[in-house]
Every structure is written in structure tokens, then in C-alpha cells.
Image 1 (cartoon, rainbow over the protein chains, first blue to last red):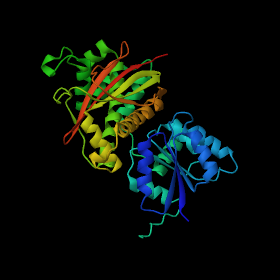
Image 2: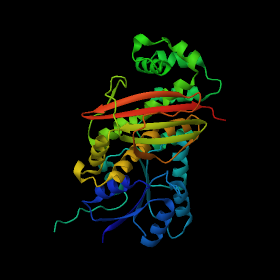
Image 3: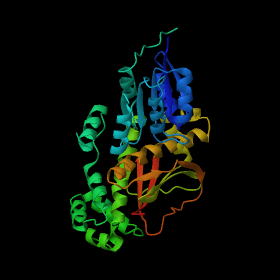
Image 4: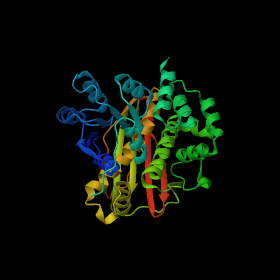
Length: 128
Length: 242
């Protein structure tokens, strides 16, 4: 069964890049454009991994992460932060909330695969 | 373990690139209300590129060095205040992030060029703006030709330029470029105690070439080139908005 990855980012560009990055693998990408949508999709889809931006309209990534970790049904879902912000306060706060990894933009697709591959088993798609 | 040591440990664990020492140091120096001008002067005088940029910022109407009315770092700081140094401290990580974005996401080498020597844009072009507010107030403006915007969008999305469907995609990619550039310097400002918030990027085609700036703010004009692509970046900033 395909691994489910939820990409939460207000930038369509980043969601497209995340989708392109995992295209060679047996992965189903689910998208959300802000933290509020992200929480709804996380509850509906129970993804195996969430890739989460910090600065977003409606609900930012830190708020989404806080709510995710407060929800007994969702708190075990591993999260990788994917953000341009690596300021001390942000990083410390996010680490305290509990994330599995943190990737600073700009990023290479290989880096995202490597970090995701440490958390979930990525299998290449079998050619039809 | 204190926050500083914790952060170092997390930076290692997550594989963060080291921060630019000179930019972080300058930001920290300027962030103090009682900024030590001698110390700032010393840091800038040690770095030929910073010195050249400061003098360019301090002589905004000069087209080349022979037209400079302000010729020393001491003069620049005395006449313009330390706000002009803040612009430099912010522009440095911003430029680094832009160059790194081109390298990692487009595989192309972006070089900083003299903005006075860059071929000026004509007519309609793409303008992206991000504002920041808090203890520092200002804007970052990113300009490029519509063709450059399309080429960059195609490169980042892994498409051919003709496959980029519409201007929405071009604007979204330019907005993300701005996000990446400014996220980097926002981290530097916040780490120095100059907390600020960024507005969402606003990207649109325009024929307006003005660079609006807050009263008393400093501005740095920068330009970058990669092959046929030229990008123009203006940063305006005014510290201590209490």
C-alpha cells in the first residue's frame, strides 16, 4: 500500500515540488494550503508523514503542530518542518513541540527524500 | 543545556548551513540601541565588499565612486546613522539565500553584479514585494522581466518555459523565491532581538519602477545575473520602530 504524505504549504510551488520529488516512489501525496486545512486532512487521511511549512495564512505551522500534538489520534504522526525560517526561537519552540526533522529552504529534492526515507519506507514504483 | 547550546545541537542534528558570521555580528551590533559605532566601523572596514556596499548605500544618487560625497565608513555612519548598516546586514543573508536557491533549485550560478551596470528593465515587468514590521520596518522588492519570471518558474517546477500554464504559476514561484530570501534574514533579525513579522508576498506585473520607502529608512539596490536572467533586488529598512 502506498505511503501517504501530507504536504502543508501555502505555496503551490512548494507543494508541486514536493509532489515531483516523491513521484518516482510509491507515495500518495495529499495537499493542504494552511494549518487548518492540514489538521482536517490529517484527521481524514491519517498520513504516514507530514511535511509542514511555518509561515502560512489562516493557521501557521507552529499552531498546527501544537494542535496535532495535543490530539491523541494524531500526535504520533511524524512531522518534518520545511521552511525558510531557521531562527533560534522558532527552531527551539518547534523542537520542544516534537518534530522528527527540519529542512531549511532552499532544498534539494535528494535532501527531502533522504530525510523522509529515515522515517518511512520509500519504495520505487514498479514500471508498468 | 542553555538555549544557545540547544540551538547549536539542533542545527547539527538537522544539518543547517552555518550562518554568515559577519552578517550575524553586524545585525547583533546594530540591534543594540546603544550601538557601538567604533566596533561597527571596525567590522565594516575589515571587509572590503561590505565597505564598498556601505558607501554605495550612503551615496544613493552617485552612479560611480568618483561621484561619492561620502568616502569613508566613519562619515557614512555619522551622516546616515547605523540604519544603513542594518540594510547591509539584512541584504547579506538575503543575497546568499537567493544565490543558494538558484544553485540548489535551478542548478545555475547566480552572480552579484553592480546594479548601476545592469541593463535596466523596460516597460511591464514582474514585481514581488514582501513587507516586514516590528522592531524593524521595511520592504524587499524583487523585479525581473516577464520572460525571466517564466524561465525561473519553468526551471524550478521542472518544466519547459512554454509548459508554464499561466501568470499565476509565475507569480507563485516568484513569491516563493521572496519567501525563501526573506525567511533567511528574518531569522537573523529575530536572533538579534529585532523581532519582526513578514507580510505574505505580493507579486504582480507592473510598469511602476518606484521603490517606496519609509521616512528615514535606508535602501540598498542589488542586481544579480545568471546567463540571460537579471534580477533586481531593493531592500529598505528602518530599525527601532518602538
